[in-house]
Length: 221
Image (cartoon, rainbow, N blue to C red; front, side, top):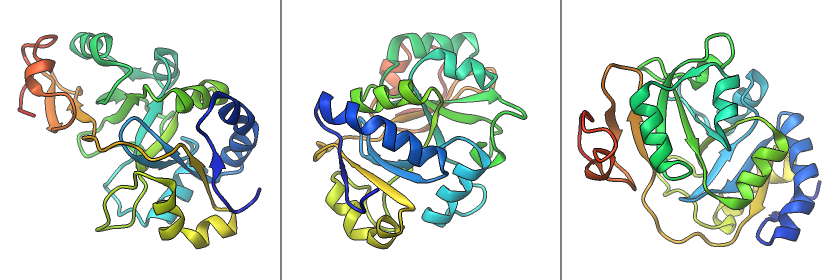
């Protein structure tokens, strides 16, 4: 594949990109893609894909990646558990900028995707192009911000090309050009591995709004 960004804006562009993008993922490559917040890096949620992402980002141990999904069946196939309060949050705010840290997934989810609380972070993205890709691929994709340490997350593919030119040229990284993304807050992250939900990263959805669905929520956003 050519070492330049792949157009990923219009429905026609997205459709034509699906097969080559999936081929890249299945070969263990890393993908740069637009989301509802910023551009992300990700790939297959298996050992090969995760290690490729670790190598690209230089991710230290103990700092996991999250998973992007496009439907509850992807969560079920991973064996992740949605407690009743998490199901209420998901019903109200998914697809959307809410990341839920879920228990379960033993022997199905690579250890590098599991956080210090023992859970796996999952978000159902509302980005239409990314949703089409996830459904065509049929599996979750890993996700982390597309930036080097100390540099703000990318909001355009040009920033990715500037920072990661050599990885793109080698074919390790394939960048999807979904246009410039408007400024936005990151997703709110809620730990759902305990008896009560707990905000562990404030973000786009406030604790006040979340408490409309789960009054027992701990923490503020």
